[in-house]
Length: 261
Image (cartoon, rainbow, N blue to C red; front, top):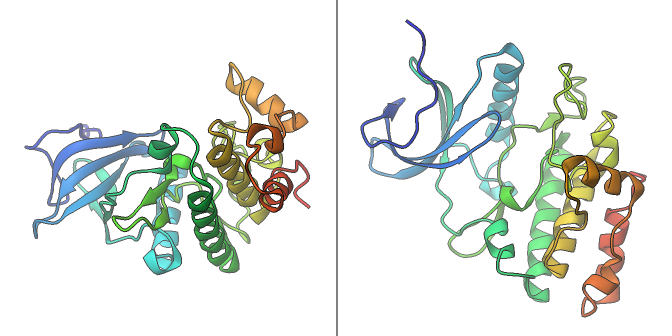
């Protein structure tokens, strides 16, 4: 009998003993579900879509990385991992209730004090990961979640790589791009080695958007955005966010420099 795919929201569906309540989001690798644990706690459940060896290896790498980086380090922590006989491997994480940075940016630019606070929290979180030899490679507003008290946590380590690992260039062996256009550093898009500098670039793109209220790199198609990133053609932040202090503008502009050095 063929296995069922990852479930859609349905109260009657269970994954590994967790009752599925609704669908939070979908991606190329899997689906994130709002679920209820056996003890009644509400959690986020990430279920893998594909069973291809490369996908399974990436999912296992995410589990291992999550196990080493918790909330104290600034990441959404791993509560449990398992394998459902019908739906496949899954990860269990707490349901972070404060929404995402993308939710906040839909309302416009962030206040300067909030931008600085979020930027510092994200920089410290990335620094802890880099010190352990881990590069996130997919930092973007959708992957920044806020706790109820407003602390920014980084989520989705599905593309994270260990610096000593040869697997995980900008493109996979099948030509699949890894990362998100507009936040992905030029060297990552060109399938070159993605170092911690790639995460710094992504953080710069996030801070630019927080201050300006729009992405640093825009285009009608993903290819057009990639070309603008490669050519570093964007509106200078000083003009896009005239009230931003010079020191912060300099930090963001340096983070967005196309040369990772």
